[in-house]
Image 1: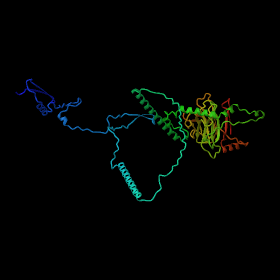
Image 2: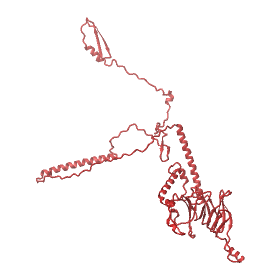
Image 3: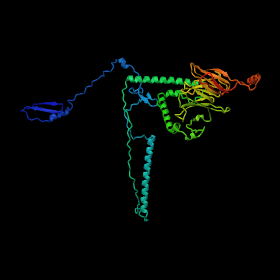
Image 4: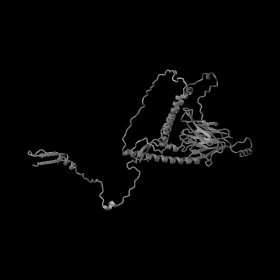
Length: 494
């Protein structure tokens, strides 16, 4: 009787067979054959699922068929465009315009060279030269071996030699180390917000605007100085000062500190002279009747005063250590520019202030109540007034031909005391025979001729005396002095 069999399979790999107890044993060969016939019976084909991004646009057929133009550029959209760097030259933050647009995705260094490249040709030539050298060395060695085999002459043993050598003593190594104290450091930190950055940029713009205004004023002032044709040898450049307002080295505080340091150094240098000035006394003066000893103390000199004569001296009435020196020339056939130097006993090496004039200086005088005002008389008859507090080499008042200047050298100037007088004024006497009162107004000097010096004839006849006076002209005045108690009384010498 045929056997009954039930079979089940799982994924085409495992076969389970069941049979009745009355049936005969089964053979497994038909089952294996069925498994081999269907190896992929449990495999299912994968399904494709279309995933749509949420930000994708929904377009119809017309919109999909339309052509869209896109322009590709080499700029990196993610590159920063507001990089700010600190400029040490300008001492401020500056916007950096250079932006790196190239992005490197992969980079690897290799040792391959193109055979047509310059470096590749050089490497190939080196290899060929090395191979040629090795080939020639092998040929030479082979020819030498063949010659040695045919040569029957005895040679000296080249390995029988002696070697002599000496070794000098090596100096011992020394390690030298120096330990220094680290410089003091201060940790500074702060947080910068939008308000602080905005305030900083606003202050910088205001500072630039102020510097620009100062530069324009300095250019206008320099233009006015050129029109006046005044020598300005030592005048500082206002445009450079406007650019150096923020510079600590050229600041007013630094100049004051350097001035104090210079005076301290000169005080140490001329300490012996200061001690002689205070305590030196010659005991032999007590035995000399009508005579004494003169001890030289300080020597004041300026490089710009070379080949000039000292024509005037005047002490300052308020500052006891300050005096003015006028330089000119008594050789009237060789006249040059004049110079005024204000020296101080605290610094004998260099003048505190210096001013120049177009002609030689003949006289000068400080105002008794305003110690900064200095009246000067020149060789060409000009009188000028300087304010030593000003740094510019330019007088505040200057007489011209229109304002009645003298025609001959001015020999003396003297300030008048301010007793109930609204405007400052001073007197001058010149070789042209005029004694003039100069009043300082707002814009210019106003002159008033006090008197004209007349010549007195030596003859007894009045008629002859008048004729001689009319032929010669006015008498020249050389000096004058006012009475200390009565201001309207003065002496003059001619």
